Amino acid sequence: MAAPGCKSTLSWVVLKRSLSASPRSTSAAPRPLLHGSKLSERRATHPAVYQATFTHRYPVFLCFSCQESMTESLRTCYHYLNETSRSFAAVIQALDGELRHAVCIFYLVLRALDTVEDDMTIPLGTKVPLLHNFYTFLNDPEWRFTGSQEKDRKVLEDFPTISLEFRNLGAEYRHVISDICHRMGVGMAEFLEKNVQSMHEWDKYCHYVAGLVGIGLSKLFSASELEDAEVGQDIELANSMGLFLQKTNIIRDYLEDQRDGREFWPEEAWGQFVERHSDFSQPQHLQSALSCLNLLVTDALRHVPHVLKYLSRLRNKSVFNFCAIPQVMAIATLSACYNNPQVFEGVVKIRKGQAVTVMMEATNLSAVCTIISQYTEEIAQKIPQTDPSHNKTLQIVDEIRTVIQSQAPLASRTLHLSPVYLSAAMLLAALSWQYLSTVSEQNASVGDTQGR
Image (cartoon, rainbow, N blue to C red; front, side, top):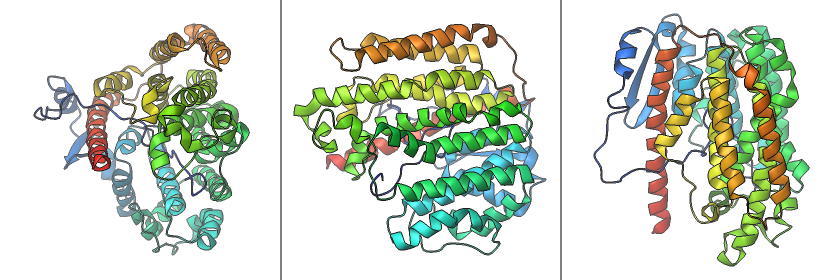
């Protein structure tokens, strides 16, 4: 909702609407998750640590080793986490120590804020003050909002439970969450009734809805002392982590957003090729559409050097995986989108097997560099000679190559492993597969509905 609303990422772990895995067969019988793998054997070695339960088609990730010590309100917060982000919940609960709870509450607070922003039934006269003042409700034990019609309205209706657990966090975590909530609310309000005009405004918009998430998470990582202070202090790198994901989201979802009456591509970009943003969905404008698409993909790629530098600084294994997985999925998505007419005709799909493989391999800097290099080279091979952004795209590809080469000495260092990491990693793969299967079914259902 860029004139009418915002498009928020909220999650680093799995891009909102960014993974659309293509089903292998619609007629085949359901297969067991990771059939033939060592998943059950590995889980058996840590029976009290992690267990995945699947309610209907949706995975729920529970940390039984922590649940016994949780307050009732904190258990409720994890229940809401599983309800509102079934995929994100898995990776949050693979984080180490008290950081797990801080990130859970951070997510729920921003989910509540985003629910207010997304609800088009709330009048602007009510919504704008709510967005501006939302951070103050964190310290109001009684505040709740019962006027939302959104599917995630429960986080607003039971906000006292979330705010209670916010107040139970350490001061170092509370300060970060409150500050990011305040800045994001102000930014969302700014873009409620305005289209993104310039490339600078595109960066600013993406900063409000995603860059601030990256900055907040980075500060939480450092506050937990699982990561060095510089991770939370380098705002530029943290901001780029969020911008790379959000721009990928916006690029890939052009057609879906058009159908919903939303526009996020900056006018400075699309205005070079057509009179109206919606013209790209018309066949006669396909070449112009591809030129604009490639321009925006190139702009997104300029954040990759920062992404690699950021990841090279991480020391904790759970934090590294938390950050790395969405970044490699983003580069895979951009590669699939680049110069691809399907962006304007349907849904750009990443195969489920490919997605799970990428997620499982992105566990160290060397592997991440290899994955990013692979997809960067795929983009390089697809650059049309006549594309208006041809030279700029080649330039950023060369920059990424140079950064990857410079990261080689760092890629061999050892990250600090959590004792339960291997079990959690295998479980994450299972959950990822289940999540991608769910998204495929939902996309198929949407496609059938639209076809009618």
